[in-house]
Amino acid sequence: MSVLKMSNIQKSFGDNHVLKDISFHVDKGEVVSIIGPSGSGKSTLLRCSTFLETIDAGTITYDGKNAAEMKNGKCVYAKNLNEFRRIFGLVFQNFNLFPHWTVLRNMMDAPVSVLRRNKDEVREECLGLLAKMGLEDKANAYPCELSGGQQQRVSIVRALAMNPEILFFDEPTSALDPELTGEVLKVIKQLAEEKMTMVIVTHEMSFARAVSDRVIFMAGGVIVEQGAPEDVFGNTQSERTKQFLQNYNNL
Amino acid sequence: MTLMTMVMKMASGLEKTCAIFFLTLLFALPLGMAVAMMRGSKIKPVSAVAGFLISVLRGTPLMLQLIAVTYGPYYLFGVSVSRNKLIPVVIAFSINYAAYFAEIYRGGIESMPVGQYEAAQVLGYSRAQTFLKIILPQVIRRILPSVTNEIVTLVKDTSMAFTVSYQEMFTIGKQIANSETSFIPFLVAGVFYYVFNLIVSFVMGKVEKKMSYYKM
Image (cartoon, rainbow over all chains, first blue to last red):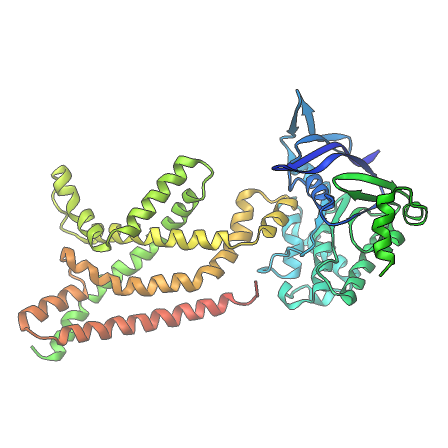
């Protein structure tokens, strides 16, 4: 069964029709990368799937349950959206860590005060996650004391501390320099090897090619092409995709 | 009257000056938050009422508001003016300062990056949790310099209580100045306010330092 299924998603900002009938699904253990030019709707799609934007029409299904569905021609969201939010985690482009809390508090607070889990148990788990990421000595540091790469790794472990079934990444390395990008991509790769279900919006083409099970190319609010990375990158079908990838290859 | 007697007489009014000061802070700081909440409410009439209150309270002199709160009940309802003028004085100061604090809070809340709300929302925090645990602590840190500014002004504004003859330090000083035809009480009052504000600045400086353990 698919962890996430989005069907016939429509989204407009005023006159700007950003998502035009998008349908896709993510299976358990699958890593899906979404690539495409700026303004193609990639980030909006991610924001719709995490309820940061409300869709105008379509169906959003997590684990077989509808979070948003069409009723009498209108899109209606489920009442218990917070229960759906437990299924996913989101890593932002600019981290959005809570600056007044230490790294450990950033990770522990939501599991304790939202999921009502045992504090000591959560602490153990979080310290374990930090150690895995090579950040064990940063537990009591504040976000402002960390490099951009470390901050992004912390925001990844903050999402992981909620034990999500699926993790979304919204251009996780776009705010980082190439050196720091590497350390963040390494972490995502590690998660992919552990069969974490992930959807990654990214401009890192070679990374998308290496890490994904499936690549989706979006342009102008529609999915132009999707398939295994070797097909999308190696045996490109659509002219629009070719044009986009060429710009990368020409560099 | 010797300088010493003047100083002692005026110092006896400091207790009341402090009463206005601390009670106003006690009531105006939370009241300002309530008004800021109303101002930012999605319910249009609530926000409009708060906006109107703020504009009236900031747009008319504090002196006028003091007189209105102290003597208004007598003229309107025939209620006799209470003997303890501390109550109307503190009410007038509190609502006036609440209006200013409300605008400071609003500015602080609006300056918060939207990403903080989004991160909290995705993690499943309720609206109340998001505000109390994530937004408010950061807002307090951001607005502290503006709040200090208001508190310094409040110290000096307590002298306004002389308009309703509340026997605080400045009122006593003004009475001595009149009876003795001397300028000295005003100098003494100036020194008192200055020292009071030195203490305020010192304390608020400490608080600001304590809160700046992180960068935004």
